[in-house]
Amino acid sequence: MDLQDKETTCGEILPVVIIGNGPSGICLSYLLSGYTPYLSPEGWHPNPLLHSKLAEQPHLSLLEQDLEYLCEGLEGRSSNPVAVLFDSLLLPDSDFGLDHTSPLEWRYEPERAIPHLVLGKGPPGGAWHV
Ligand SMILES: Cc1cc2nc3c(=O)[nH]c(=O)nc-3n(C[C@H](O)[C@H](O)[C@H](O)COP(=O)(O)OP(=O)(O)OC[C@H]3O[C@@H](n4cnc5c(N)ncnc54)[C@H](O)[C@@H]3O)c2cc1C
Image (cartoon, rainbow, N blue to C red; front, side, top):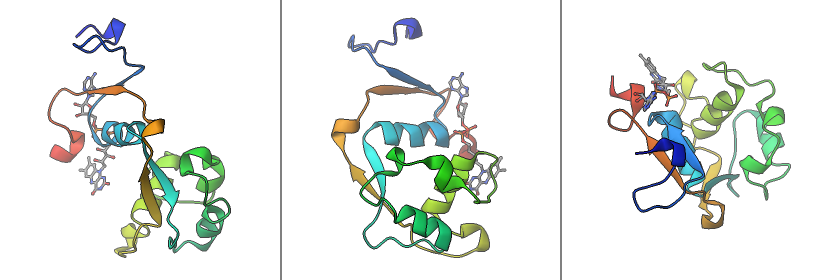
């Protein structure tokens, strides 16, 4: 495929090409497909500070909120604060062996979708295969 033109074989112009089909590429593709994270109406996070911040603007998706503000004070296994935030939102306190339900709900909002292509050298999943 000619990456310079970012064209599919059907001739459609794609505004986004994601290089790599590991967990990062898969998650980004999910978001670009229009799946959008919100605090669910019954959502509860065991970190009281994070929970109160999330509850300030529950009508806004996380993608429209100040991620730096939400990330403040969180600790986790990644040096990327947004990765730590999403880990904490998807599986709260899982590093302590706890099994809390995620406070997020994912709404499919096709109007947000951006056409894209994910390129990988092998099957999807990246490092998870090894
Ligand atoms: C031993 C180990 C255990 C782990 N255990 C856990 C765990 O229990 N839970 C957890 O959440 N995380 C775990 N992780 C971390 C998790 O695997 C990584 O955070 C995650 O794989 C990172 O995803 P990624 O998409 O950024 O990168 P990768 O998983 O590395 O995926 C990148 C992909 O892109 C492809 N690629 C790279 N360059 C190109 C290119 N130019 N063109 C096309 N394709 C390309 C690569 O072949 C690869 O398939 C573990 C990691 C390791 C090493």
